[in-house]
Length: 452
Ligand SMILES: [Fe+2]
Image: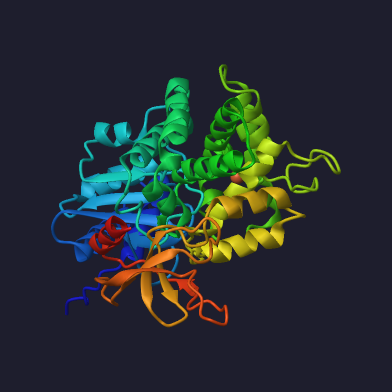
């Protein structure tokens, strides 16, 4: 009788892992090797009978073509994060790939891709996932924003991405591109309602370090302007903010990927990123002298605690303190695999709680005054149960903006309403009670922003 054919991605990885050890001990023709090769091949065919299958191990969870699978965690010690196999893979290719990947295989500096190709393996490739994420890929978040509402913001993300890609692959960072990015953020992005609204809002996508960094730079810039920094100081601030987390490009993959709590040793390594970043930046000519300092101090607290330990009571430079406020806001409004993003108004309350100890109270106040709790374009619920989109902010009363009512399926439903309006007794007619999760449908979001 035939075995039941159940597609099992774990079996592919488990058998493949076992095969790597077996090829170290036995010759290719040994029955144990032959059996295991066949097992891998059968398991692959059960997953797909045509085309490529992509298996990624993310946080130990096996993902098949980007979708997390149920079942046991991935076997340890695979030596790769991604396995791409074509359904036409042959037994010889499986055996050769296992041989190339076995732990004691001679490396001689050639890439694994090259060694697989040299052995005639065309239907298997392996990869490591690039460690530039602050929050690891989560099954429910998209890779990036599905729509970017401002072309300048989009361009600034592309410039930042290039800089971080250069750094994480050991190339020199292009200082001209960093300078262009700083000018773009100061000259255009920060004055774009669409871009700022998108940065302030919750982020329902994987918030990679380069996106986080651009956003932190824009938010820092808003604080810097609010407290009256000069143009030269704003230049320095934005450069430092863009580069504050570059140390993360040097932290081991497994740690950057790990969600939730880290153990003591892991935390120590993770907490090295400010120092590592500062060292990286200090070696680069042409940066503002404050840039490495901000990278070093951005996890220090306003009263002289935090990490790295720079001595009891050593208070960070004001530029570092600005970046800390922006960093925390940006981090908590971002999507994480183990936590939903915090809406803007709740993130502001969190900042308020940290003011005076972890964060500088005056800077938190400047930030909250510089932004609105309900950014333009955000979808909100009023105290009367109405759904509305924020179309204008009232500077004198940031909690009571001008909104336009929309129907539950997001069609405009009425005139603009100034929520500052009060009744005869002096009470507000309505309050905004919450921000509402933006719809999945990006066309609806675009319509709402166009209306805004
Ligand atoms: Fe950081």
